[in-house]
Amino acid sequence: MLEVVAAVPGMVGGLIRHIKSLQGMRHDGGWIGHLLREAENERMHLMTWMEISKPVLCPRTAHRVVGYLEEEAVTSYTHFIGEIDAGRIENVKAPEIAVAYWNLDPESTLRDVVLAVRADEALHRDTNHHFSDRIRAKRESLFEDMDTDSNKPHIKY
Image 1 (cartoon, one colour):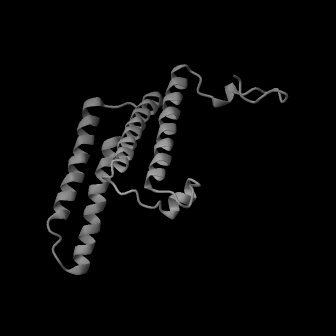
Image 2 (tube, one colour):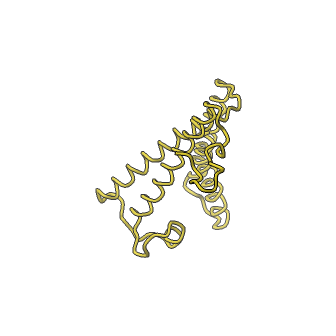
Image 3 (tube, one colour):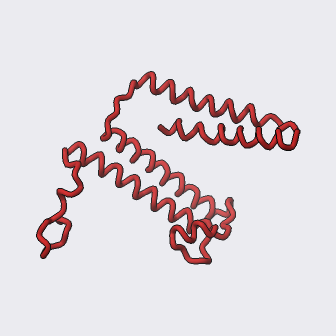
């Protein structure tokens, strides 16, 4: 799954550089070939692992794997925050799109954006592990935790 995503930047980057090279009628310095070989390499990683594992669609496993991938994202964003705090990445003003989406303070910075994204990733991690656990317990309906008595809270505690 991760290999599918990993192949995209090389392919897109190679395409963009190819178009710019054609528009400007100039050589791109070798980037196009490198980026496309990188995308092909990532595709071959995926094809190899698919051949080895011969995966069968299993929602429980899919949610578990996504939970693990999201955990890696949380770890990566934590390192990103460390780089900002250490001064190795400039803590620039947050872009307006991020301020609007996460309802951040207008004076927010890159660090605030990374904190918001990391929180999203943590929620995705926990949600996918929870879904995997529910599937394993044969409790796939999220409605079974709801109480139908209108005089009580709607969630069973």
